[in-house]
Amino acid sequence: MDPDHSISIFPNPNNGSQFMLKLPADFDLSLGEIKIYDMLGRTVPYTIDGEGNSYCILSLQPGASGIYNVAVNKADSQMCGRLVVVK
Image 1 (cartoon, rainbow, N blue to C red):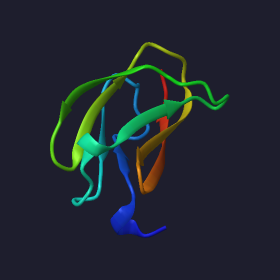
Image 2: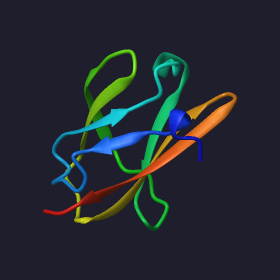
Image 3: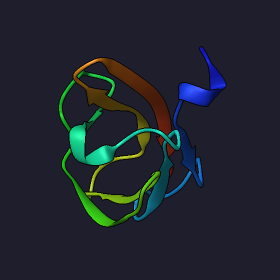
Image 4: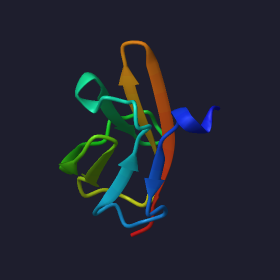
């Protein structure tokens, strides 16, 4: 995977209350969609606490500890990352 076209999630691991999703500088989040899935493939609800040109601050709705897949989709590309939640 090209590191210039990947996402970073930090702090990771965290407790799920608030984390930052850093995107490539040329990625326009307004044209994309963020999805978070648990390990069973179920969509996990989240809230957006803040965003900028190349980052987004998210909080998961109350849930269990575990590993979550974060996908950022745009019409022509997809980027994925993993978030570890320890409660």
